[in-house]
Length: 403
Image (tube, rainbow, N blue to C red; front, side):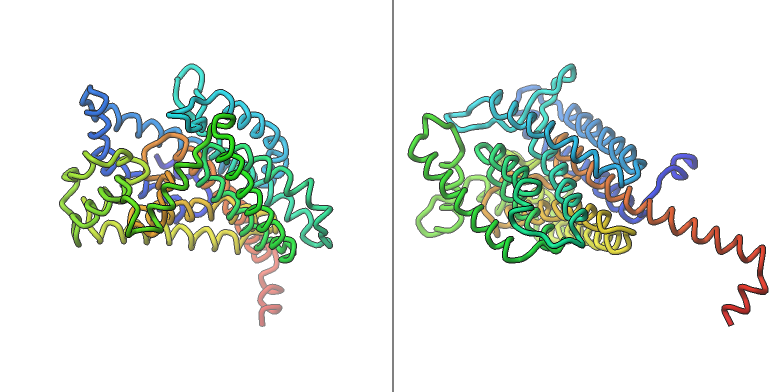
């Protein structure tokens, strides 16, 4: 154990926060999984707990392995991974199934183990690293829209176009995060306004074409529209079944909750262990538990900002923000959906919800952040060693300079 801690580098508080979130996740996931266990007829909740444990072990293994890689290597890796991600998204789009005419091609099967993998989450991480790489490369140059169109925006819009038909919420998150990162990276604001406008026009055109030719292109446009109508038109629209039960769960929780494992609404919420796990957490642990979880994510955000600020390069700063901010943003959206501050999106609660892909990609992103902070620690350690060496060799000279 001592040797293990010796090999762990990077920001210790980030390690602690992620470990606490992972350990806490066992309680709500085990409780909420009883719904799935009895739905599928076997009633075995232990199997879901073991599966969640395996997902976390693999996630932490990914995080540990990635944090040992010097972060400068992610420049080249993102460049090589972009074509692979695009091919993966194309394969996912065409091999996916349709459910009641709606495009559900979000997952591909992992050979041998047979698990499903949501390729859009991998695409998000790779794309954010790629954008950070480009912005750091042109940081001290005069950037024109024409020059950045192919190397920066073409891959972004290709990825978004491949994800959009089956997953609008993930597409929207990626687009918003790319815009935020380019803004932080100093990309000209007038060009960003043009990109946002182009994004809205493209989305409008897609919706119009999808509505005009629904049979030619199976999609989830009707689902998006119904969810938005349900959220905005509270007087006339029928309340979403999931939101209704989530609100009952939150109201039942009160200040201190009904207790771990005692949730009632987990039997009615279809996605109680993933999309709506925050509602189950508040029902079982109350406002105190929900607020504690929110504070944990805010603490993680603070450490991400600190690591970015202390990074020794522009690429390091943008890399940390690029892969770190989406984790917090996704967590806020998940919580907002549960309390009906946002339309239903299908986004999980990072590091807490069940689901292998979400856990693995969150751990991949955290591993990249830890890699950047580990480099900072390495530089600081070398500086301290040099000072100690100078003090041993020329103590009087160092003292006179200080005086």
